[in-house]
Length: 346
Image (cartoon, rainbow, N blue to C red):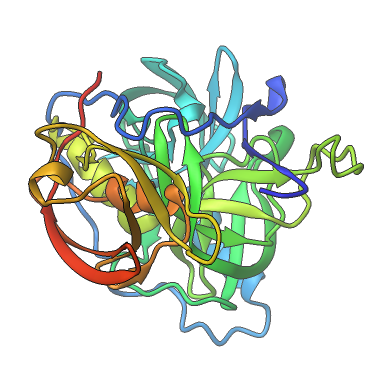
């Protein structure tokens, strides 16, 4: 990304951690736990009508009590309670392989949380606590389309300052962003988020969580800014992706991502898309007839402008999913249907 560096919103006591490069499009999927009983709450009814004169203030009142601070031996991040049974969603790099964390509730009380599992591919983790009396549960905007330009309100613990509220808009959706183990189509926002915001809530003006704050673009030496804090470009894990992964973690199911079986690079010249340079023998791509001279330009009708876009589309698919790929082969457009396999790895 020109002029900046994408970094994870690392733990507040430890500064920022550089985001990993996309070295293995089908790498480790993370860990899962044994099945846990849950008491799911509705995600259909918004807590606010969305017409408040001060939307950030209104959202802070209804959502803030559900947002928590998560402390580990490496530092701290954020999270939010999303289930009455005491389940907390956060970013995978916040838990960083820990089995237990300290959870500071919005009222300042602390409790021990068990890490049920984390998925490196989407950077999602789930923590379980014993529900305290009066615990507030966040409402999730699952199944709700996130629109470019809509209000976006972030709540978390930047630099350990818990219950910090910032506001902005959704700058873009479907932005391909690297995670510790892959790529996701992220929500981009200009709501200020910084180190320690990782795992916290990004909400709409109705108080529903639309994403998990996860990473930012910072200034780099090449840009001359020297800025390692927020420059107005942040990314959140879409809540539909996060909730689907969390459900698998809680159920003790595998979170392995879809597998296509190709290597490639960004197309050059007049072409735009993912230029395939290698097809793994016997892979889903090979069975679908994809060759090393093809350029993938769309997946299920959604444009693909780079290899990272293709990786994001495949990563968010599941083994067994059927995808329609639009390809350019020697100037001729055609479509192929591919059935995803299961990504290998830990």
